[in-house]
Image (cartoon, rainbow, N blue to C red; front, side, top):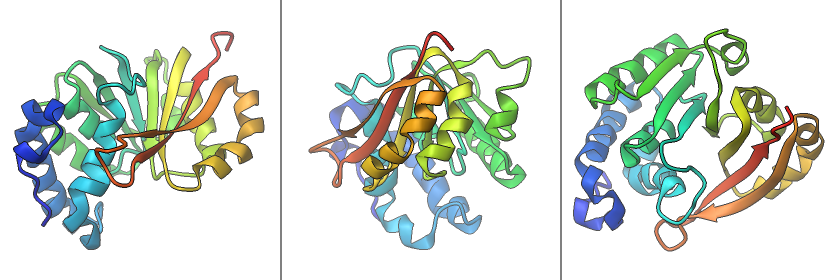
Amino acid sequence: MNHIEPTDLPPWLAPVADQLRAYAHVLETDGVTMGLIGPREAPRLWSRHLLNCAVVVGPGTDLVEDSTSVADVGSGAGLPGLVWAIARPDLTLTLVEPLLRRATFLQTVVAGLGLDDRVAVRRGRAEDVCTDPTWSGVDVVTARAVAPLDRLLGWTVPLLKPGGRLVMLKGSNAEDEVQAARDVATALGVTGLRVMLCGVGEVDPATTVVTGVRSTAQ
């Protein structure tokens, strides 16, 4: 297994190294057993998954501001939501997951890591959550490996407060997805849709992110 010692982590993650390692252990064991993480992914868990997610909220990216509320749509094993919650103790997270088995896994991990004071798990589809009368919107919505951007926008934009930001972790075809989603983005009032790289020099490859802002007129 690719276990990274705390001294090998970026310095800004050193204070939360033990908590990250505890989460990594859960992913390598229960996560693999439950099919949330593929067995072939376990050896590169740190480089391709944990650090890949963490650098998006690291120093200098300015994508997720201090004391921000975040929704992670289709959270699955908790990527990136749980990584963000560990890396950034100032954030409050809602992990949105429609499947009971995965939602139960997330609830167990959240409690086990002592994050239940600022991380909530909501079982349901994003389109149902945003119509719940108790939902007041979040500052940031994220998702990783959930769906093509044109579909993902329809699920995630309604979860945002006006002026809220999309921070989607994407693959190498992100530019093509952005072009294909232009009309949908315009219809949903998303401005500034663009692709950027996070963690250059910290992770290889750097993390590709699609970001945009929900219009305050929505």
